Image 1 (cartoon, rainbow, N blue to C red):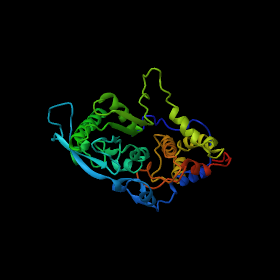
Image 2 (tube, rainbow, N blue to C red; image 1 turned 60 degrees about the vertical axis):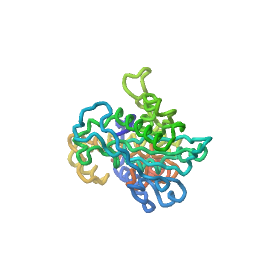
Image 3 (cartoon, rainbow, N blue to C red; image 1 turned 120 degrees about the vertical axis):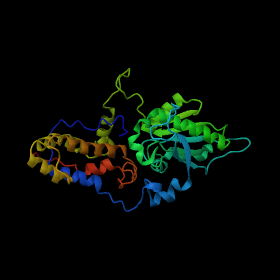
Length: 347
């Protein structure tokens, strides 16, 4: 729901692959052992060893701010309340504040998820904080984690979920923190990745009085139809495909084998017996839909590959799975190891 460039991997319009190695491929995705995983919530995305070696949630203090539901109207919001409790974390171990120096505030513009996930997986802010004597602030995006306007009725009042409202939340929170922490002389640098990186970019553009600079990673702010020059809508696909090639140290046959699978899936999707075979091969809970003729299965598998590419870190991580299981180091390489042979066309 947040990857604006998630047009996905490898065009599913090509040729064949054995059902057997389809099974092997999916097993390779999900078979990494999660034994070292601590769990989500306040430990979202961390591992036992990470707690020792890497700063994270254990170095921060949780707070809630009485945030405005609708920054652009004086009318009572439809949910019946003018305010909601926005969660944020302050990590002050490295902050330097004295008569001669007021360290910067590194502000994470939370994106679509529990903010603790980003606290525990954001390296650059933690790595840079000691050098600059910086205070770290991680703000949670409205409607995610514990920052839900109207509580259980949030789903009936979704029109307050917008980029404009989220940016206004962050500006209001920064002005509040600068006052309460006596940090008026502290410059603010926003950080974010993917959608969060887009927020950081737009934050600097729209609220230059609140933020002095922005560092945005993987932030496709120009990836919209109608841009001039036009964006390359297949750039994301190209990168994912590259991760499944020898260029990224994956097996030689991997990308071709994946390409060759799509038409086999579509062929199986045309008949009831074929769909049952797909259900068995992929260990699906239900038989694929006759309406989609295998495309639902293909896009499901395709998205798994995209997530492995996005989480192709050189160490085990549960970041891309939102804490639900652990991907191995270089997961695309691991998955491609099961696709390293030249398979027959026997389906």
